[in-house]
Amino acid sequence: MTGNTILKVMTYNVKNSADVLPPPHSWEERKELIKELIQLESPDLLGTQECLVGQVYDAAEILPDYDWVGLGREGGSKGEYTAIFFKKDRFKVLEYDHFWLSETPNVIGSTSWGNSITRMVTWARFVDVKTNLQFYHMNTHLDHESSNARVKSAQLMIKKIAEFDPKLPILVTGDFNEDIHSKPYEVFLKEGALSDTWNMTNLRENEELGTFNDFQDPPGGKERIDWILVQGNITTESVGIVATHPNGRFPSDHYPVVANVYMK
Image (tube, rainbow, N blue to C red; front, side, top):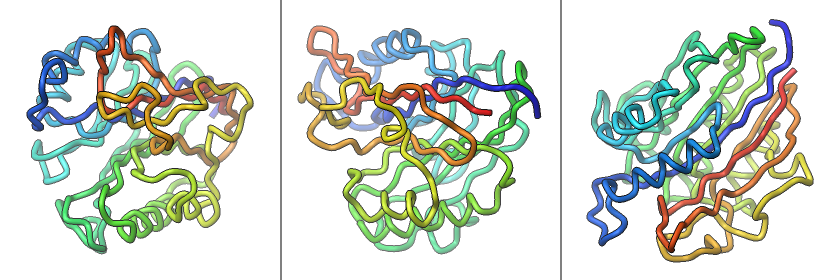
């Protein structure tokens, strides 16, 4: 590995298209807003949550500079994805895989710990073709109901991270359905020795906002439940919440979070 890599990383829950939402919140009405937001921010890596297969294909079509890896959480194309999109002229995927947030992580669609909905992780090892630097990106969506499931999921992710090449930096993106004053956050930062990019810089945009706007709350609530965590030789230049809602139209019920990070 040689060189240094500057990356713009985004995590974004785009809201699945299965829920029947009143205008202007349907996927067909929102996807152009999401396209505009992503093209304007131009992240190098994008961890998405809640995309169904049609949304993944739509995103691939409207974002031609990106490729992706992912799998439906019920197996194949079934269920929501935790797909990772990446700029295809800059990165190559060296390996990727998925595991389920349960006591049987290799069993597709498995659940444990009190969560009624299947939860999973998608991860990939990338190489930056410009610098030859390798790194991991792990993306997830933790359970929205069971606090126990969120804690156990965080612990399992830490265990999986320990199986990665310890010399390589790691990015973790996701909708964690918890704020920073929570046990899962503590697990990631203390047990897992991860760092929150939000705390690694004084350059923070919209730091007074939350990230769950529910299609109606411009301040995004009071909690930052979408995080970008890192481990390894990484510094953070700036972070922010992208609170875009042109003419009162929200691209999703979450605001994306972005971080500009520097890898050595």
